[in-house]
Image (cartoon, rainbow, N blue to C red):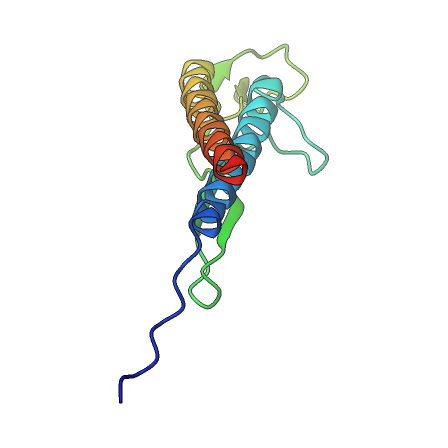
Length: 139
């Protein structure tokens, strides 16, 4: 007696993970873009609510080991900010130096371009998978 044959996979369902993965990628890149935008907006903020200069934020992605879901966390970049001699500045220390945020605009702009390109690539994959799914349903 032969064993029962496995249930064949459905081609339409095999396209769903690519939609989910590209949507996750787009969401992650949007979060990267938000964080980069916040860094750029605060590049000259020498005093925040706690009295210190703005600290650059970075997004870190990974997979949850238990669920396998993508997780994104935001962490402060520990790099010290630059010191500028400006004794007339209201945030100058006793030696006349002002500590500015550790944000380099050129680095942020490069990161922004990369995040945007990755977002566009994920959107292209999403559209291609959606098109294939639509055509599969028409058959």
